Length: 307
Image (cartoon, rainbow, N blue to C red; front, side):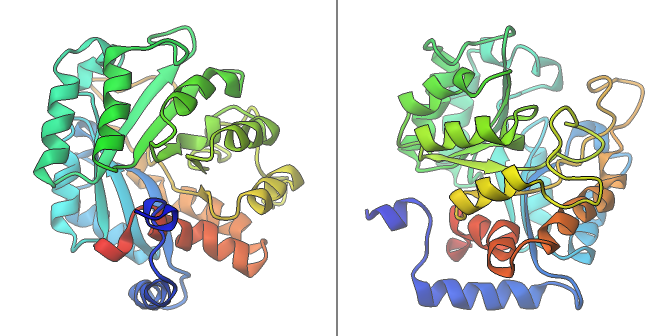
């Protein structure tokens, strides 16, 4: 397998054909968008059903979506209602109440193997690694490393969410598994651009996505100025890694508390706002860079030519 094939790049002619096809799939007036961070969870079903979610995505120009869910089989509900343009990931939280200790569940790795073997799931994640809580990426953990080994074995992407004050928290894991194709959720969440650049330079197997770096959520280190334009240090990051940056919406709300049992998650109602936030800063970038981040990088990474 060549490096270009392993990194998900179709041949040039096929890439051009795909771009034309996906562009035609977007509604008139909307630049086609690949949303690489979607959820369709148990506590969102009273807000939106699969058909409504797909209609909202299509109405706003999303032509490729990547979804993970609690419980994991709900990702298949959304992808099953689509026609190949929703990529389902296997989230290793087998029940919603295991979100905070999923890494102690000995069923996770066998269930993930079965999910990938079935061919119904295209990758693994999202899963969370938080500094001071749960596994430390610097140390081997049978569930975390087991998932990473499965990602390499099946050549499947893996979406990882980290929470820490330094990129060095994540560094040992991506270096220990150099053949894993990793998407770094939210580009590290609270981290500034310099930290993200340092991680991506150290780990060429990591792609960053900028979901939730909006004005509602990760606001400690904003990525845009008061006018909604991408800050110079983030533009520099994209110029440094033009083929390794993607974005998405992560339609989850509220963030003050996690998954209450008596209130729905209303993130899908805020989906248009989140997407508009990203479109605004993308529109201010040079056209070639914007197109890569908005669509092309995701088409290649998630092997749209196979879908």
